[in-house]
Amino acid sequence: MEFENNALFWQKLDTIYLSSDFAITNKKGSYYNSTSDLQYPCTFGFLKTLSNEKDGAIPCFKGSASKDINAVIIQADILLKSIGVIMLVGCTDKEEEEILNFLNHTDYQKAVLLRRSDVVPSWGLSDD
Image (cartoon, rainbow, N blue to C red):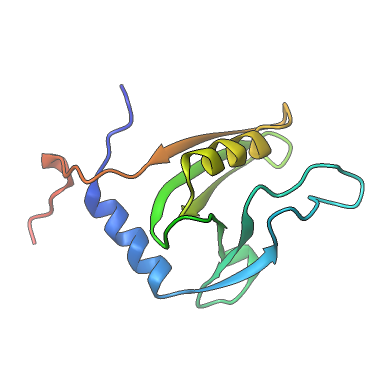
């Protein structure tokens, strides 16, 4: 089965994004760490949540295009035994590809991209 998109899901992400502040932690071109030549392909940071803690915040890449959320990335890390979600805001197709290359650079973590759609499937509607 392929990914089933739902425009109402994206509306919820828009609400989270628009009601949060974005805190930049790494600018485009900055190095991943002091021992790596890996550079951030886009500005990276976190949406400040009510807790204002990095652990509770939502990671986010900001591209050069618009201010709209255009995709999310789901990333699995076998060393941390974790799964994470990263929002992509205003990223071009090229920036999306660069981000995927950045996040998939090691065998210990892999990521997939889910692009936004305006489809509302019948199962996506609520009774309310």
